[in-house]
Amino acid sequence: MAAPIYNPVVPCVHPIPGGLYPGRMIRVQGNTPPGAQRFAINFQCGPNTDPRDDIALHLNFRFVEMCVVRNHLTAMSWGVEDTNGGMPLNRGESFEALILCEPHAIKVALNGLHFCEFPHRVPFQRISHLTVDGDVLIQFIGFEGAAPPPSQMYMSEPPAYGAYGAPPTYGAPGYGAPQGFY
Image 1: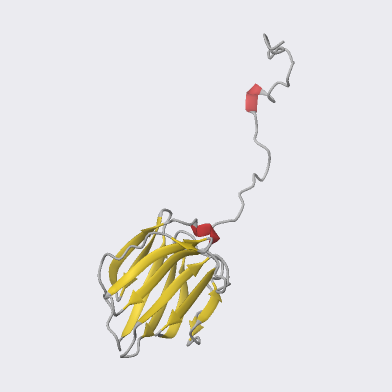
Image 2: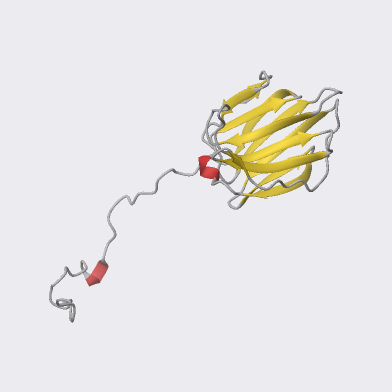
């Protein structure tokens, strides 16, 4: 399991050890000041913020609008915002966000309650960094879950053809030459 990050300076950019994959969960614990306007947690496809790398999941907590915006960014262009669910966090209070990658979506729980699912608009395999910015203090970022899947699957030895023998080669008896292509 990857080492957690304690008390990072915000704004921050951190690599996600091993990347994001189904079964992987990121735990973010922090608090917001009483006058907080907004803050964001981004799951990015690289470390750059200016110009910004693609973002697979943008969680933007907007206290003035009382919503949590979910979106993605590709080639510096934002997708369609999802704002359903209201604002389950309160200014001036601590919070815990759990972000779980599944094969078809990312699930988000806030303070122990399921908040939303965000279907993958950018392949999760591209996610490499976590960024946090805005009106927030972060105490802890933890990386949890199953071990990453193997990056490549190789056969340890060639398949056995059993009693059938090796497949015939082109033009061998039983296969014959192609017909009618002249």
